[in-house]
Amino acid sequence: MLLTLQADLARNYFQIRALDKDIDIVDRTVRLREESLRMIESRFKNGYTGKLDLERAKTELASTQAEGAALRKTRGALENSLAVLLGKPASDFSLASANLTTKVPGIAPSLPSSLLERRPDVAAAERRMASANARIGVAEAAFFPTIRLSGSAGYQSGEASSLLDWNSRV
Image (cartoon, rainbow, N blue to C red):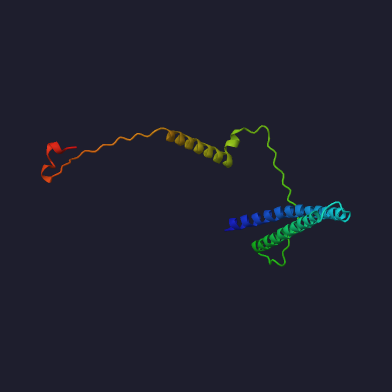
């Protein structure tokens, strides 16, 4: 139970940090769209662009702002669930926005390649490849004709009295 609680806590925390990064990107996009709208409004006033371009820029800005609002709502819900997992009232809990910076660990050049064979994803890929290879063999075998020989033996007669005679055998 404790492990499940810790896993949920970690999952929610990292989802919040990923949303923080997404919100930052959307906020920068909103600023760029606002700047673009100002330029298009200026061009519209001077007669260089049509009303369609102006309306399209307004729509793109509104759409991006709505996306940012949806991301903030999702972040709030995750923040509330994080508060519940921590045992704190959601109204008293707040997690400041921060970008999660992750660095890929460096791999020493002297490591043997046999370490790669122990990775679960590599082993799973190897099994999938072996399975696909076996399916290829089955598919090749399906191209060859199948011959089946069967036989039966018995007695045949038009009358019950001659059914078991030697001449009635089939």
